[in-house]
Length: 316
Length: 316
Image (cartoon, rainbow over all chains, first blue to last red):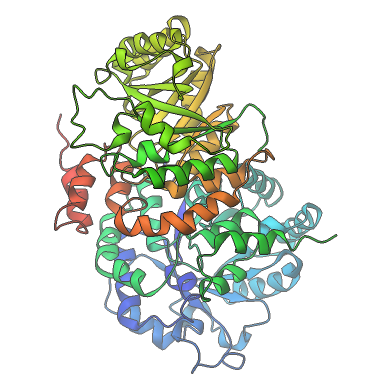
C-alpha cells in the first residue's frame, strides 16, 4: 500500500506505559526515539500529559507527565524528522501545564475520550489547537458506542472541533474487519474536513488486519507499537505496518535491531501479546481489566472458568 | 458471522506435525480429538498418508502415515460427530495404502499440490473420490502463483476434478486482505460447482483476519489449529475462529480447556507463532525454510542480518 498521506504514529512508550506505570528509563526511551527516527516513522507518542496535582510523581514514571526537560533528555543530540506527540485525558490534565507550541518539543496533542465525553474533548483539543499544536481526538471503546450517539459525536467533531484527526480506538480489541469498515466509512462520511485514524488492540490478532482495513477505507493515520507492546494484548506491531506500507521513506531495519536488542529481553519482564484471557475479552467485547486482574492472580491460566465468569454476567 | 454452510477443519495434528516429525503420542492426539468433538468442530485432520516405502517409520511419528489401527487408538470410545481427514502429497503416496472409504475411519482426503502439479493432484483426488471419500485439493504457495497459470489450474479443477473443495493455501503467510479477497473471488468465479476453502499461515498475524476475509467473500471451508499450532508461525487459531462464528453448534469451552491443560506446556517445548524471522519471510513472500534454519542456529535473534540476507538475494 502506497499513499503519501498515510502517517504512522508510534505509541510504544505511551501505550506500553500503561503496563508499568510509565516507568521506562531515559536510556530505553532514547533508544526507541533513535530507532523510530532512523525508520522514518512520522510521530512518536511519548506519554501522557497528566496533572501532577492529580497523580503522584512518586507512584508514576516520567511518561505520565512528559515534562519538557525529560523529553529533552530523550531527544537532544539525535537527528530526527519524527514529530513528538503526547496524549491528554479528559479531567486529568491541567491546562496551565500546556505551554505554547513554540516553547515545547511536542508537535501534536491527542485527546482521548469516550463518545459521551466528546464535549470535554472538543474543549481540550481546541485549547491545544489555539496554543499552536496539531491535535487529534481519540474515540475510545468505539465497539461499545451506540450508533446514534456516535453519529452525533462525529457531527460535533466535524463542526465544532479544530482537530486535524479523529481516531477510532478499538479499546476492547473487539472489532472485526466488517465493523472496522463500517466505522471508518461512517467517520469519513461525516467528518469530511479531517483525517481519520485507527488505533487497534490486538486481543484477537486483528490489530494489524483491522489497521489495513481502515487504510483500505481511507484512514490515513495509523497507530502502531514496536513488537506490539501495549496494555494487555498490545497493539498493531510497527514492524508489520512498515513491511506493509510501500512509502520508501520508511525503513524497517532500525526497528528489527531495536526488537533484537531491547524488546526480546523486555518481553521477559513485562507481559503483553496474544494471551487467551485477552482474546476472550476481545471476542466478548469487554474491557481488558478483568483479564489483567486474572493474569495477576493464581488462576491466570484457568481459561474456561474465566470465560464462564464473563458470559455468566449476562443480566436483563 | 453465521452461515450454516461454513465448515471448520482443525489441522492441529497434521500441520503441527511438521514441527516435530509427526511425533505426537496417542494420549495427546486423543485429547485433541475429544476436545474438537465436544467443541463441534466439523473435521479433524490427523496427519499425512505418506508411503512407508518412501519415508522411514523409525524417523517419523505415527501421523506421517495414519495407519487405521493408530487412528482407532485415538478415536475409539469417544462420542463424536467430527469427521476425520488426512492429507496426501503428490508423489509421496502409495495409492494401494488407501482403502475404500467404507473400510476406513477417515472421511476426507485432501491433496496438497503446487499450481504446476495440479494434473497429478486431480489424478489423486479423483482416485480417492472413486474410493468413496470426500476430497479437496489444496493449492499451496498461492502467493507465488502466476495469474495465468492459476486461471488454467482453476478451470481444470472445475472441469476435471471430482473434489468438493478447492483450498487457497497461503504457505508463505504473505497475503494481505486485498489479495485474499482477489484470490477467493477469482476461485469462486471459476470453480462454480465446488466450495472454496482457506488455509492461512500466521507469519504477519493475518491468518485469522485473512480467514475472515475469505469467509466474507464466500469461502465456506476454513482451516484452523488449536492455539495456532503449526509449522513456523503457525495457523489461524481455532479458538478465535470459534469465537467469531455464530453457529450455535460450536462451543469454545473445550478448546479453552485443551489450551490450559495441554498447549501451554507444549509451547514450552515446541516453537511456533509470532517470531520476527517468520514475519520477515511473510512480508517478503518467502517460504519459511530459511527462517526455520535461522531459529535453529546461534543467530536466531539477529533479525536485521537475516532481513538483509533475504533482500540481498535480489538478482535479475
